Length: 115
Length: 114
Image 1 (cartoon, rainbow over the protein chains, first blue to last red):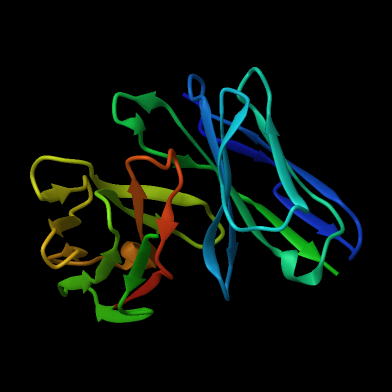
Image 2 (cartoon, chains in turn green, blue):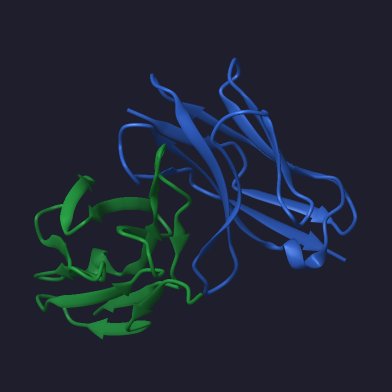
């Protein structure tokens, strides 16, 4: 079974631009979560989508947004990029079982550099 | 709100020595507990998890962790480490009612020396 895939793997943007990152979950997984990883703040939850609906949201400004498509693929968008948005963006997918979301499997991440 | 504290940011150890990576959490509700490992330039891989049942959980590569509810801890241990265990290790919690939202600790960098 193919794992979680993220595209692109690396990205360089300049301040003020916007960026869209893509995540394809494992087949059969309907939950997709996004995380930002930086050396200073560590791993922080951005948001979670399930069946095309945002189920959970972290404490990030409105410049960070996402969506999920009917095939469970998800995109996240960051508008008006700032230097501090430079980070590794990780996507994770899971199935929902009787106890709610099961194990989350992470993709390799998209490394974003904002100049 | 939930929080996770990994008590050591870096743990250097010699090959074949035992190691313990410490993790404490804070939560007013019941949680699921996880350990993830991250190798350089890669995503996170699940090492082991505690959902319910036996408080001692084991992974396939020799790591184990014990859930201690009274001490709100979930320390990770391995009796004999290998060079290939060098990586960053993250402890995480998830509550029953917050979907897939994981709260991570700051990570512990394990460095295994020959």
